[in-house]
Image (cartoon, helix red, strand yellow):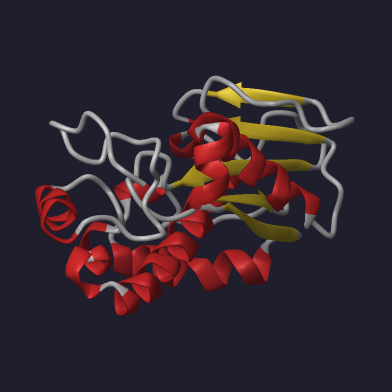
Length: 199
């Protein structure tokens, strides 16, 4: 059973990211402020939901949330600052866009780069505990999937529609056979036997 809030009476924004473990593509994050009486029996950690259910939930979340936003950090930025910092930056970019200023942030995970003048709580597996984080996980995941589906049209050999840039066997085989694209994260171990790439 997901909880509606951590601090009763405060405007809380749940934040979560998608795409941290991928070999290609941007990392996305969402921030969502739900009304305190929000209820939806379908809502859960996006990893526990089918693609169909995630996409069914997205318009519900967008319609009923008091405010929501999605931020992204490009593969080039990820290579410059590292994926952990990039995940937090994507969250900051989402929070920047909220039309309602939160009084507290609920962050999925165990670490976060503090956002100016807004206190926060990190919650391990928070997307399975709090509604706002679960809602953020659904938005981050579906918006990132849309982005990877579009990139798949430009680079169909990597099967990003299926693997979304994650390190599947098919994706690694494509990297081995086709080389890398401008969307691959060059600081990641793209192939298990990789020692160095000539960029």
